[in-house]
Image (cartoon, rainbow, N blue to C red; front, side):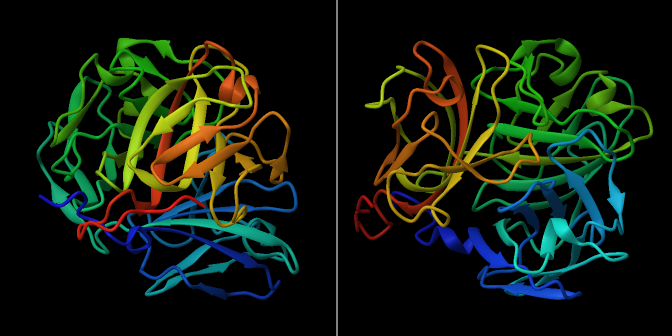
Length: 352
């Protein structure tokens, strides 16, 4: 059996950097595929994280740093097309600063779904999905019922991480992670620790076909529309797990089975820490020290508190900040590959 089904990770996930032109609409290329989920962040100035997907469609925006309901055609900019090699952005009025301000720099993170949608009736609540069973990623749209139930993912694999947002109401982003379990939740827009409540996931672990919801309005308000991003482990391509910090610059090593291209970490054992994001395009060599915070509008940062090495088979913390490597603290992570540790033909990855 091959080590991994994916030899070229950039066929399914790719980071693309670009410089804004100030003109609209504007096409951004170089992704290498038609993305179904696009996450954009302005690098050099304060701006919201812009999250768009092909199920909700063009002009529809959510902000990971905000409780805001879904915005349509807002002045700060949106994705206006999902192209064969990238995407286009546009704006209403005279701003567009979140996606294409003249001379500003941007990072975009792009995931491939199915390049199409399918109706799914596996759960008690019907859903619409764009599922890529090869890369373990699914976008799921559903309407809340207010009562405990299940929602189909189309993944054919057990999701290890699920991120859900109410499109119709100002409410928190809600995160399920397998490392914190089915009685625990976190909020992508906040710095809270993991906390227990059966009302989010109905104390039920996701299966290869559905995830479970309790009655909490943040994930299941009756009549409201929701979007869920579901991620499964794929050997050599994606990994969702946990680690314990050691408080040292010779920090904790986390084995993923591939050379990372992108990683986000969050302390779960205490409140007050951000969701810290690194990628291999903004820092092309170790040590990785340029990061964003998914819950913050801040420009990208460098800090002695948060540093990481991307290695051939995982990542290693290189700073002592409580938000990424505090001694004895517990963290969750989500990670996508640049290269598998060993390709399907037996070719090993090398360190940076």
